[in-house]
Length: 204
Image 1 (spheres, one colour):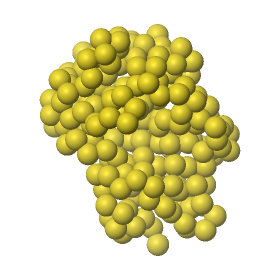
Image 2 (cartoon, helix red, strand yellow; image 1 turned 60 degrees about the vertical axis):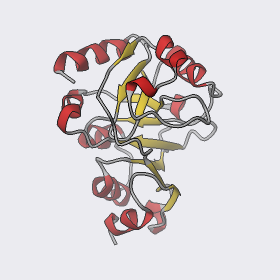
Image 3 (tube, one colour; image 1 turned 180 degrees about the vertical axis):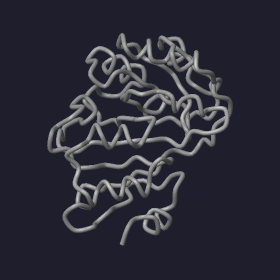
């Protein structure tokens, strides 16, 4: 990965294109979270319904916290404790930001900030959010190498970025929508980070 790759990625996303890209977990698909056509194409490539919830990925934690300024202090502290890393955090979304990523519940948003180092470190230069989902047909396994991505998906995207072999374990999904009110969290899907590790890292 190079700075030129990141700039090409930016240009693709800026015009509502769909990019195939490496993250800290598996290969994903990304588009502009405000582009109805980009989101429609992304889910069509996966064979998923267009109103399925997705995550918004930021490549810098400070940018995520700035974009979600209405998050309460307790939730912000939790995000700072858990991110960046291979987690998807569901948070309250009272401002109904990024509605195309929210599915049927506009007041709940999935947030990702990947931990990118080594060959993927240039991706941290990206200063804008993307709507993202794993680069696999609905119900199929995740891809840890670019060559593992379904051929129809690879043919259908506007850009492919090769980040080499990835860990291949999906993000852990944690519901923090009750965290501000009562400190409650729920692990909805255990993936790259164990439920015990999530609990240990959250502020008491």
